Image (cartoon, rainbow, N blue to C red):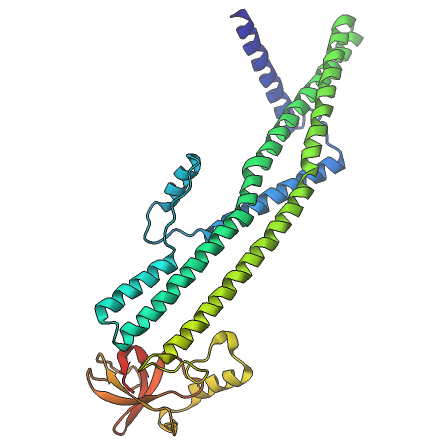
Length: 365
């Protein structure tokens, strides 16, 4: 019991001494031992590495592990499984959910209808895209997110702990220096015995030894940041490789889907004249788009080939003179022209002509 009380008292005294020293330094009333320039640079570099690694990790999590819209509390579930050291159960990605909804809708609308048949094909593709995304997320989590998190939760915590210990020993060292300075001043006035001064000098030597030893340990850990950069560089390359593979597979799936849609009966042809993709917009395509904006609708001429008939699904009121008002169930002639927005067609009925939204139509031939 006496030992515990003494230990507690010693610890309290040490904390008080550090607090006094720290306060004196902040007020400019106490001297402070400065680390050498090399150690200071190592600490600055380590802090910079930690801050940016943390930002990159958090944003990568937002990119790679978004909250699934149909799974409330999914993040909490993953956290609990991780703490219990159990494998997180597999769940559908958002793409797979979208594909499933499309296929379910197709069964309701009728898979033999143009819309239902297209929904089935697109739904199958979305599920393939979702599976590809799942593989990408899994690969990226292992090769990129996990190493970053291990650094933040492992290496950096160790570095922080050793730096905190170094700072405490530095406060003890400076407090010992301050006590020795006062003791020598008192000795000069014959107000203190030389034995007391020798005791304080011994305490200072011990404090200096402990500080130097801890400074070396901390320095070695900080120098290990260079190895961390090398490791994170390797992880970055693996992440880029996984991302490139993912987008390549997605591109292949989308190309296959376009071919399948073009083979469907009553399908609207997907080609360069139907919709100008922004990613492939050349100067010629841009000029065509500009011409479409400036071209008056009455000047548009139907192509010699490529016109189709369409049934109007819903009433539509034209917004301006360039659009054509529609009445549900009527049959109109439609076609597209180069540079036209892929969500619109040019529609004709009798002597009337104007742009019509493709979502209001069912293409018949």
